[in-house]
Image 1 (tube, rainbow, N blue to C red):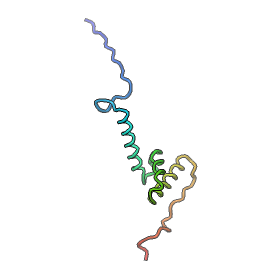
Image 2: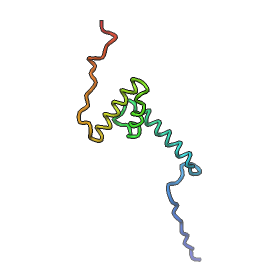
Image 3: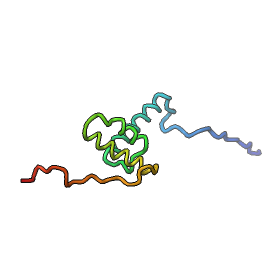
Image 4: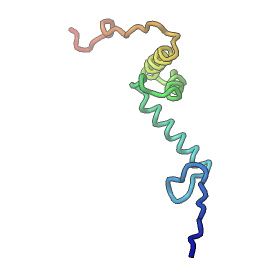
Length: 102
């Protein structure tokens, strides 16, 4: 007997990670978690943070003094990436009061 050729249809899209694909709400929840994690990881490491995280850091400028300083670093990084800041001034530690001075 002759073998009957079997055609395998190609499935569209990427296969699901688990047993079934995610719903739209699950995908959005996962995206929000990734964005939140990126914002947290971007604080203090602005040079490697994605643009979305830098923009979120800028939105928190009124939260505290530390958030304001972080927003300044984020703005300087955005300027460096897109070329509208040519020279950024490094904060001077000489003017910072030290609690160990006598």
